[in-house]
Amino acid sequence: MNAPLIWLHEEALRITHPVFRAAPVDTKAIYIWDDTFLRRANYSLKRLVFIYETLCELPVDIIQGDTMSVICELKPSELCVPAAHNPLLIERISRVASAFKVTHVADDVFAYIEGTADTKRFFQYWNKAEKTAFHYNGGADAQRG
Image (tube, rainbow, N blue to C red; front, side, top):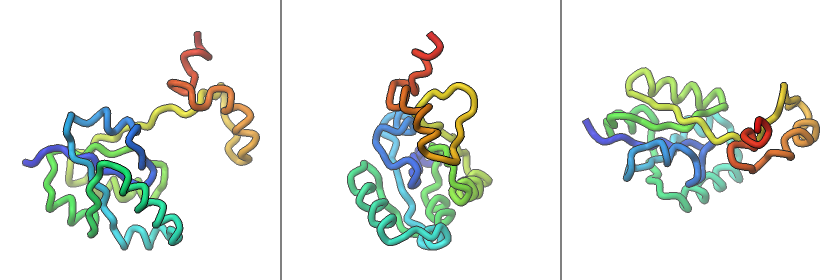
């Protein structure tokens, strides 16, 4: 069995993502450029360029091919994967998790909001979120303290 891998996806394209802290030291990070998935996700050319340029700035190997085929070829002992919100990504990760050990790594909290947040309108959400946004732990410690 090979070493563990970090499998990045487009919702977690930053070096500060907790997946890099959760994985064992010197764990190789990969991004699978799966043309079929990207077409299905219907990303614009601008978005694809953004994803590619961002990947070029990260310590990650970009591998082109079918997701399942690439992972089967690499035979990782474990995959550390950032938690996803996009249903297509969740489906893709679940498919891989049926054959490999996958550890989902949650993202850091962005903002602490008491009660429920109305996410239908951005400014209604932002008026509640801006007080704690960008603070450590989303400002949850200060709100509770």
